[in-house]
Length: 135
Image (cartoon, rainbow, N blue to C red; front, side, top):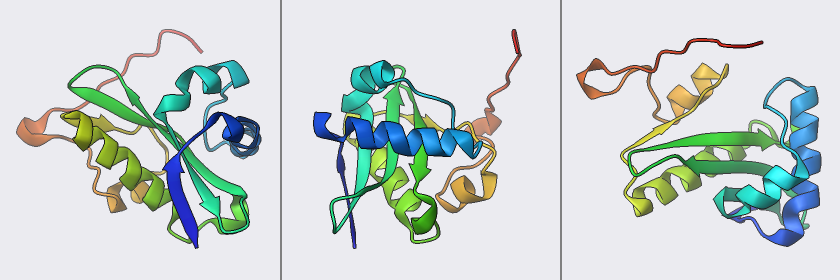
């Protein structure tokens, strides 16, 4: 059994370790401890019955209209148990509570996010387009 809850100051080192592990696996972008501290109110953690942090996700709010699910990661031994989906659901619930109109995810895990209800375009066929300006 896992509980998804807002992250606290006491979770920071465990979050940093879990995110670093996911960075090494090529799953997420790096986050410094300073960034995690600044973004702490945006984060959720998944906590196992034994108190271990086995997942993280943040809802980064850009404005009233748009937010992004970021730093979604789960410990390798718990993958496939629905923890990632529960973390995404917590982010989407927070977005609804805040009245955010759209939530995006930039990912190479398309199938996972599509299973969570995300799609490539929005009503009226709006899409995000990107232009790389650096490496």
